[in-house]
Length: 346
Ligand SMILES: C[S@@+](CC[C@H](N)C(=O)[O-])C[C@H]1O[C@@H](n2cnc3c(N)ncnc32)[C@H](O)[C@@H]1O
Image (cartoon, rainbow, N blue to C red; front, side, top):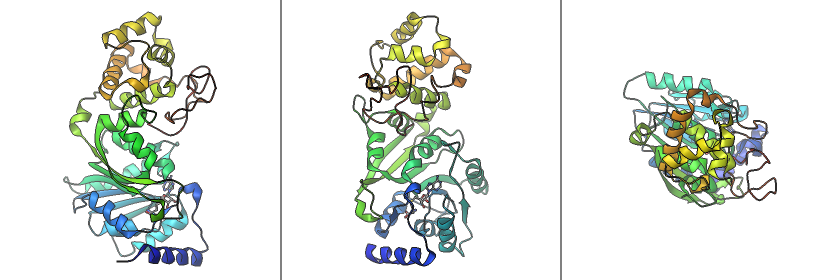
């Protein structure tokens, strides 16, 4: 077995020879411990019916290992130099498609070319199943995972990914805690998740500043079926956590203002759900979020999904960084009137 030291030396020489260096902007921390690659592949229970999506193949070591076991691998690599290394690592393997592009379109959606390649791979035989297996670049992990989780036809049967440990902890977090946010609700509402292993910075080159984790997410058909409108659920969870420190009465009134005559209508909706208006989003459990989204859907109607965020310029596609209170007013909503917290969730 190649040791981490040998892999590191190989990568260093390869990069030097090509005149390239790891690019922090792209979250390039390469796994140098091949045992970890092996653990990722084993945890993904790879088999001949699988079509694997790998975002960020880097030098292609995990790609080549997986391609031996599965029916097809679709890899997406933003960095042309890395895409070239991946192509070389899998040359001779007919079942790997290397897309050199951003895996995301419009910052938070999975690029249509990626989805089309997955559809093509799955269409080859009716028993093919999709899996996401990757050492994900940290800045795209949340949109990749959450978009696949709610995707109507391309939700994977399994996701095994390496991510920052903090993000893994957020996925597993319980209500009331600082870590609990849109991503916790989304993952727990739609899947069963477990942390497979915490990874020390030492297994990467260059070493990141923080720990990472391999997380295994198993989307559940039963849980999905309990949520009638997945995109709406995603939208409600994401929006409500943009104002995590306001009470729910204020949050709902403010987020869907054109739809309410007055706050008494919000109170009536909350009362029907057995919730008091002074409760905060971070206190709601997953089932309460499912019920809330459904009640709002019935009350507000389909056009509510089209409503822009209260102040779109300040509210990115995210919510959830714990405990920021950027406007200093003590309520942590990051703005005087409905701005978001930023930080990368849901
Ligand atoms: C953490 S490295 C993983 C590399 C390799 N799979 C490994 O395990 O050593 C993340 C990889 O994702 C690529 N990447 C970063 N942002 C991306 C994006 N938006 N779309 C596709 N690939 C991206 C980086 O260039 C890098 O190769």
